[in-house]
Image 1 (cartoon, helix red, strand yellow):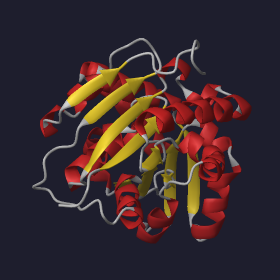
Image 2 (tube, one colour):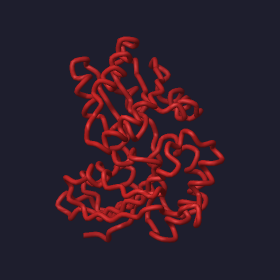
Image 3 (cartoon, rainbow, N blue to C red):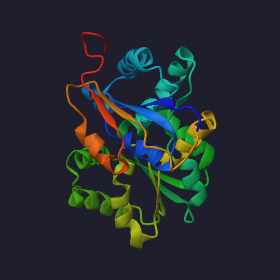
Image 4 (cartoon, one colour):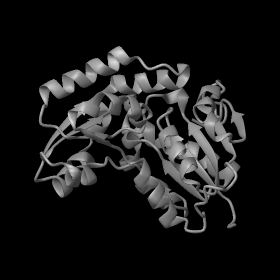
Length: 274
């Protein structure tokens, strides 16, 4: 067995759990440090200057305390802004999240795609560059769905989905855009509800896709020594919160994997950093 590496998964809230589940279920041999910046949640409310300053300080603390071998910026809103700065500052791999527009354009038969995202993601030029590069031949509907972030966080906290709110959102989407046959979940929070979204779209011949599998594939490309072995022992998971709250409900979301879990609360608080 190859040496276990240390991986930080960084998000403002629970969204990165969708990627964490994929890493664990694929059998990647690593120890995971899940950094949730709940003290600044959601990142969409921060200016680019505030987000960059905060992220750089938090990552400085992560580097000093955990010395990760790789970092996943598990937030569409933050990825395009932060990655160039992080890669320039630290000589380790950083993986960001890219909306799955390229595979959606290849899969769509009707050439009509809906992209569910946060308002901050839709306002950034990067998503339009992706459409221009990979989906010129498609009609792409960009739909800001901030309520889905709250629904995902609530599901992680309680284990219960507000099905009425979710179904109303999806009903309005498909009534307004009946030709959509491929739905892109362009926020890492949204795949947390993927099974419930797919249950709604099952009879609509709509394919639902996200980026989590592509992120694991990229991880393996960058860290080929982190052997994928489903028979390997579950990774140690350390949940780190910038707020004074133990993320026990995050651990509950991964309980089926029986990972050893530890918690760090109030990480890098205002007395130390951001």
